[in-house]
Length: 465
Ligand code: UDX
Image (cartoon, rainbow, N blue to C red; front, side):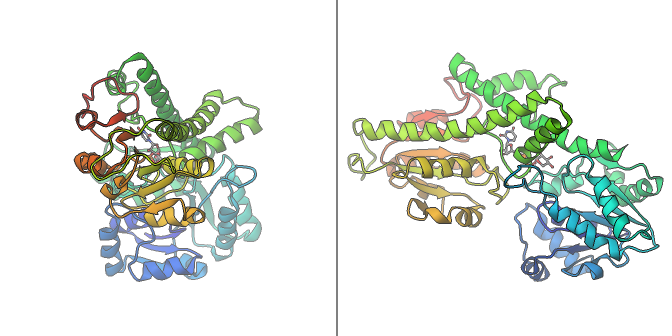
């Protein structure tokens, strides 16, 4: 099938590569000329595990091509997938649909009497499909097309894995012809994963499912984060509690990892958009609202905790410092930050709790110097933090973060942080304090080496390590 995908971001590009692997002829369209130029030179514009190999394969086979020209890209396409960004509007916080509507307006004149399905993959408020349909019909009443909702459930960092291992494929449409076309699109995938369900629903239900799924997952994370706070005070261990509740199949084990709060380009945006939509409909989604507000407060209080600890070190007597480090000179704390991406496996810093914590410290405590490292997100972080060049030192490895640091803070759940050489850190830090907001380090080893260690929701022993 000839498929055109508009938007080459974290959704469009992995989807295009995945569909090419399923045997389809895919053309990716983007109005950003520099992006398309890079992709044409086999340079990926995002980091996704496993993407490069499949990308190279299908580019060289000619199954995957790129263009900035909408007319050329849409010519002969049986399916047009819209995967442009719908970021929160800077003033209203509602999903900004301007890119999406612009895409619809550009698609319309390219449609003709050959049947085409226009599928919205971007996460959009309920009723957006109606608007896309009316834009197309208004501009080109002759267009023979169906506008459907085809939400994506890919996780960043695992997009390729998720593409080939979906739990379900949701199709929002009343059109039999459109449903048949989407069924044939995914036929090769369903042959490999017969357990995967195709779920055909109305367009509005499909649009709602995406928001409901993301909001429920965000709520689950917020719940476990609050339980982690409870465990810290009550002497329980969050991992034991998570296992105990997760084994109940009605609850499930996933998304019960505590941390500094959820982030990324989906959960914060989608919970906010759903909350706003509900307010418009006069519905009180109190749980979604509480999750959203609670998560914001959590991120701020996690940042405050770092500042508080730094202040205590500053006010208190110098500890027996690490070898080679002099006594505490009180000129301002040095905090080593491990992780800037919103989660592991990605270079994406958008709405990253780590970045929000860094930003808060930089604004509220300008005397603190941050030594920062992330395995993949350094370039993106540098762009966002460019205004703070004096307070930040970008280093080249996780170990280097510890040089002269007073506090080591783990903010992103990168697996490799678990292998951090704490012996090395102990030797190079000025004070030996660890705030492990992702529970990646060994509490036992940290204690043995004389660190003051605080994880999230941990009991007195680190049985999970
Ligand atoms: C999410 C959904 O999982 C995906 O189905 C949807 O298509 C897009 O939104 P993504 O934003 O890529 O995917 O990230 P996800 O892996 O869900 O994590 C989101 C945030 O929650 C991250 O900040 C992560 O660190 C945090 N998280 C996740 C936790 O703190 N604990 C968990 O147990 C899981």
